[in-house]
Image 1: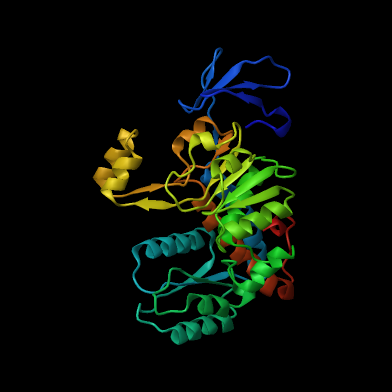
Image 2: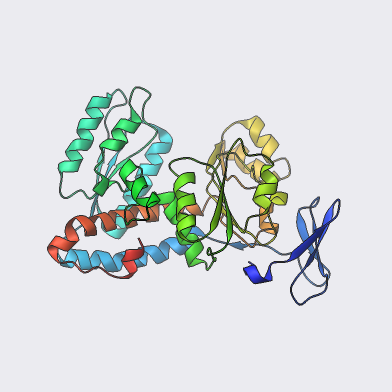
Length: 362
């Protein structure tokens, strides 16, 4: 990834652009038709792959230190997961979260009400968890059945136990820059940027997507980190041109391989939040037409997981997260971090548990 002071200047022609680096004569070309860099003296440039497992393991190591301190004070953080019905994807997500709890030694409880549950019944379930002192975090897995008022249920979660960071109080604290529990996926994206040495201060950042879960909190976190932030959405005009001006691109539109390589500024950092499950054979044929190995894997498995960013972006970006194996791992890591933080804030001070400086970042 190029530091901001070393980003190349670009003079473009109809098909290719000439790039000049500080202190060098024109020496590198970017061919937008072939979607790759070409160099007379060496191999094509490829992005640094920001693997989620590396950052997750760092966070887990730091959390284990704080967990030891909390246990010494007689506190074991607890997370309750509410899984309504039998949605296969939701079952996998909750299972992975419970497994992470077991890995770290966090107490977990899973509640599995029927898919026929009413809003009032689910609200009562959440209120019961609010009253349980050994539960520090409450996770209500979405989507919920259509007869359930999801907003009412999520707003029933006590803000001090809102480890998903979805409650209006949590969002309000984020808007005003006050300490609180932050939505896990955006928080994970920020950890990737910080731990990989990507400078946010003064950077031009584009957030693609304006959801309450990812886009809006992501933009706020970047703004608090002193980036200049543009939020893009389905009505944004000249979207490729807007994205191309960014030093940091966070793609969270939910559109398979929407971000083409020539949308990106050479050397940009790309955080791909997309988790698009491809199950339609026709869509797979279209997406994987030039990727025979991916198409063959799809035919064997019957499904595929792809991000919002085309894989060819790795030949243009300076750094990029993979899908799978990128942001998703950090989402779970930050859920664990929020659960530990909630336990510390709720029970740690009363018990005299230490407050490690490292943990304050979470």
